[in-house]
Image (tube, rainbow, N blue to C red; front, side, top):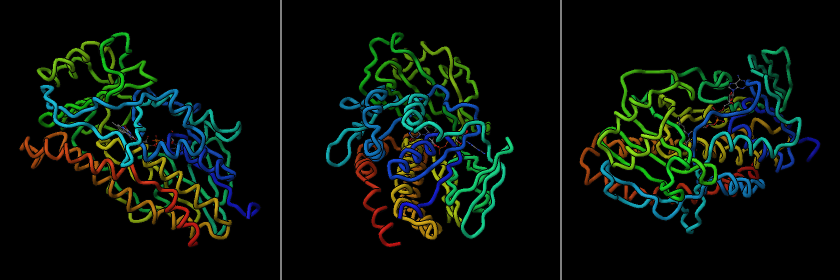
Length: 395
Ligand SMILES: Cc1cc2nc3c(=O)[nH]c(=O)nc-3n(C[C@H](O)[C@H](O)[C@H](O)COP(=O)(O)OP(=O)(O)OC[C@H]3O[C@@H](n4cnc5c(N)ncnc54)[C@H](O)[C@@H]3O)c2cc1C
């Protein structure tokens, strides 16, 4: 089987592409990653990984790195009203009680994924511009004049994926009328801040989230506020710290105290897309935000990209070159339903934490935030590997 195993080219060296490369190498596949930027990197912002993806990070040998760079959050993590009144604990474990919810600095996470790959796997300064395929081979051309052939091409090139139109006609991302202000504050400037808690304040049409990153050295905050201004989705648009402070004036004094320490903030408009009816065509498939950009209100975009990568690696490891299109169909069949549930859940949770729609009734909102723990347990307990193995065996 090994000589007929497919060679894989991944376009995009973000969290999704780099994890998929790790998972494929762990499965014995030959893989290369092509990234448009001249070097791998991420700007300063946090995100969190949850048990449903941490189990895969552990499987490919990245458990110690996650523990080293992550900040485990646990007891005391809670939802609060905007004035700080507690509503309910935040679910951080799976159904077995395993706690693996870590705040991470995005740059640390990209570094740890890249550091685990053998030299020569990642090729920077490779922006893909053209894709074509025949029955058994795919070809990608890059701006720098290079071109490569592969048996499988994985488009992990983000929400504005340039390869996606080769799978499904272009669609417009859906803007949700919200921007997030994101940024980091050194622990030294907030010496009393609890560095083992995930805290969220839910108020009328806004919410504020804080969790630690980089093994408790940095406090990560995100403030979500409504806007009429539709801006391009971007990591790097600068925001005005005074405007951010004004948005949360009068909220819990802990938020005002944190925001007093903010010198620099970034704005990011929130987009997702309607679920795609198909992710694959021939030897080309989509992964991560290229397949399923989602709102951040369940913190699952990167976690779902990791599940995608694990599922695809397990299936491709059991596939010969001739079966690639069938294997990619099996992968998307397995992933589409799960991801659509998470995309929809993120939209719903956004309405809830922003007290919109029916949730303007705060008693109902608070009751649902308490009940939300069950959904998170279900989300975090899911393990994609047994299902991927079954899908591969059925090929
Ligand atoms: C406000 C906010 C908060 C979030 N918080 C969380 C969270 O807490 N937890 C979580 O799991 N997720 C979170 N997410 C979502 C998460 O950040 C994304 O889902 C995740 O980064 C997607 O990874 P990706 O690799 O698919 O795409 P990206 O990270 O966008 O990576 C795509 C890569 O492809 C490269 N690329 C693009 N075009 C080309 C090309 N033509 N050729 C070569 N390379 C190309 C890009 O340079 C980039 O490196 C959040 C998102 C937002 C907006």
